[in-house]
Image 1 (cartoon, one colour):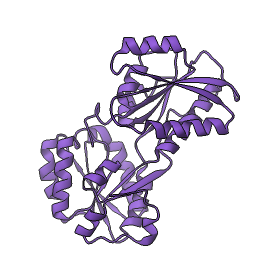
Image 2 (image 1 turned 60 degrees about the vertical axis):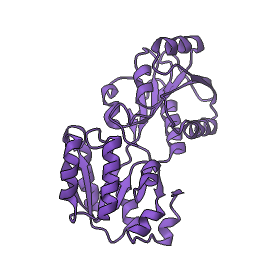
Image 3 (image 1 turned 90 degrees about the vertical axis):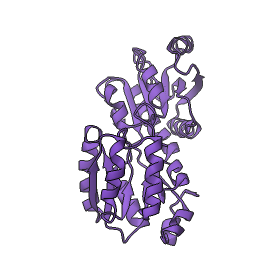
Image 4 (image 1 turned 180 degrees about the horizontal axis):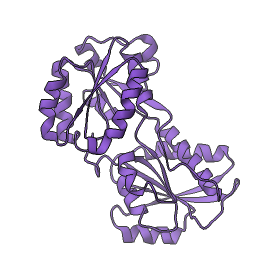
Length: 307
């Protein structure tokens, strides 16, 4: 389910004391802070621990509770004195960023939501945003006869992504029909404008276009108009999107560990934000049958979840 910028943040932060030098073989204490909600924390931590173990780095995990109570969170972190803090989601990142001299690793946060801290030393993370080129390659495998991809977006939030997507679409044999919307009130007319002009409706993280209400409306109307929707989480596929493309959460945990390792080597710059390098796929077979869409057996082998 998509929420406004504060809502579609699913938070995971890893704190690393910037005053310490950590080398391979060190025994690290890692504090984990997450926002409220059902987030893939265990999957992310599994990947993080696997990558650390493969690099001969022992870690001790401790979970920090407290929700939005910063004083409580700060008290726990002061007592634990972690070498790292992992945050899951935007709310956790907001809390973690208030603590000075502790590098933060975050996950389940969009690039747009991470922008306020993009220039801050010691705050790194893995975004939720999968590269358009990777997504379009998956769409090409799933629906090889499709030619036109439609997308709603707010230019104030996602113009850079749309510019990248237009190039990716051309590279994969698609044309991109991008309709700007600045409020959800524009969604009905924008959806009417897309009818008969696109073969696929692609969703992106955009607070102006997607709220729980607008998402339900889009899925319902797209189903009635027989426009396949490509969602950005398994919840989309479950709710009525034909398919969903989302990050491999375990591998995102591995990426967090790689950032932590680089960050722990003083003097070596670490990339501030990485996109997920692996994607997972969910499909809704019932929606496929309603739209007379048959996935190839080769594509079905790449699917991770079926509804």
